[in-house]
Image (cartoon, rainbow, N blue to C red; front, side):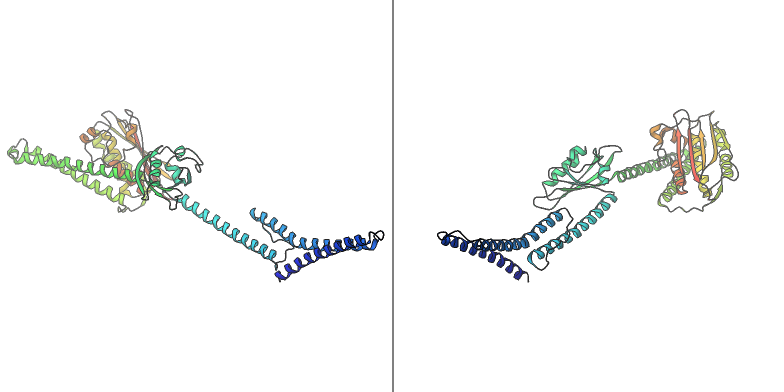
Length: 462
């Protein structure tokens, strides 16, 4: 059908041209023949004009039938480039031009569908990259940034809010990243290195840079892992092993020394043998307390410690704990005071756990309060929590020690702490117990002006 239409259109064009040519030639010949006989009559001119008009109309019609669809199709092609293609009006879908227009329409629909798919995939990719804790960075061969998720911006402390398209060294001061990218571009193997990132807080980062496939390669993909917490825990583990070894070694060495002294003859010395035995007993008790505290804090950290949560009234707990340390306070010439809260003030916790927290804080306050000082225990309601304060007028804690005072075996004044006894785990146990009950322990202190430890424990639901 389409070929026949084109054939007849071309036939009419050629027929019109041929007819116009024949009539024109005939008109010229007739004019030449009749020029000697007299003037050309008007019928000849009329016939020639009609022939030319008919040929022109035929040519115009056929050319219009060919050109108009092409013009409309070109308009639709320009609209397609802008994404607004609509079916061209007046184009017959059965001829070649109409088929071409239909192909354009189908192509545009396919492009629209693929564009929607690309947008959806891009949104999914952005959602995945944005939710990753690892930093992801894509760098081109000329070291400009092609892609960077939020984690990479945070870990590398980007100086620019919009890093895409900017040089890597202009965006971050992390020189190891630049070196890793250069090395990855020159080798097919992945490049791994660990470095400390600039900015605050300081972070330990593990970098893995891999060259993207292609010839030539379009760039390097960099993945960053934050190892800060892992390295901190490793340091704490090393310190814990060292501290536990030291704390266990000290009483064992004392026990061994006193035992050897007795074996070498002091056992027969009635003036000193009982003194050595008492020292052995004291060190054995210290070793026993240390082991018990280590086991307790290990159970707390592992979540194996079980508690019987109940509505615990604070007034009797405070009174009993203060009476328990009354004799110790009097022996150290420290005034131990307490202010009982209302009888209805209760906390949702384990009774023995609350006593352990308060006992450790009072014991710690008495140890570091010199003679003539005072330790005060008070409590009050604070919204959904109840607060217990243990305030002393002791030596205080330096600001740099306050951040670590609740760590296991950490002592702000190591020599004084060992002289006064204790395991170095009391404050750590108190903090872990409070956190297990849904509360917390904090400290406010100034050197030489005493310290105030505040315990927050949740109150029973109304």
